[in-house]
Image 1 (spheres, rainbow, N blue to C red):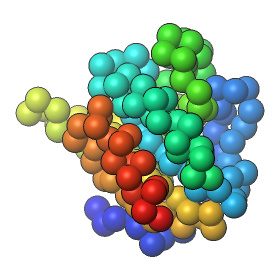
Image 2: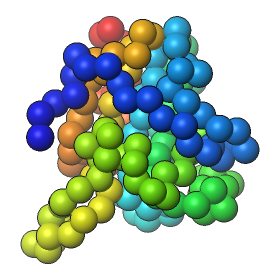
Image 3: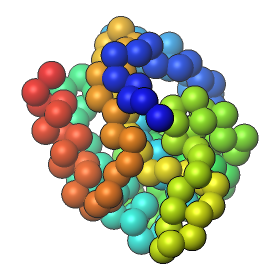
Image 4: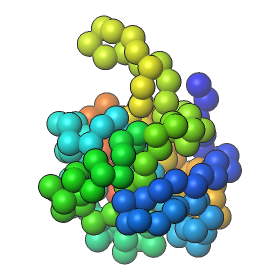
Length: 155
């Protein structure tokens, strides 16, 4: 798969943990970090989400919004947010269409087994809706939010 960098970000409309529907067009004029993760309340996903939580005010200061996306239900997202005090919206993509559009759904290998599922990945979208950074695979979930902040600071 080729990188999405430099391409127009695919639009989406998904339900958010804040009870609203969210579309990419809602965020024109702001940068958007979208991180795709396999499941609420699992070790790697929790470390990554808490990393974004801990850096959220610094990220917001850069005119940037963080959105997390998984296949999990809104009820699951609500529990995850409450448990770890997450200050940003989580979107539910039960049909995996948005994840597929962003190359975050497909074949992956875990512990030597091939399966179809969510590929932990992240995009940064600029104020005009163009993808300026695409991590197609995030190897170290706990260190990733700091790398995202570094890139945001350099834009």
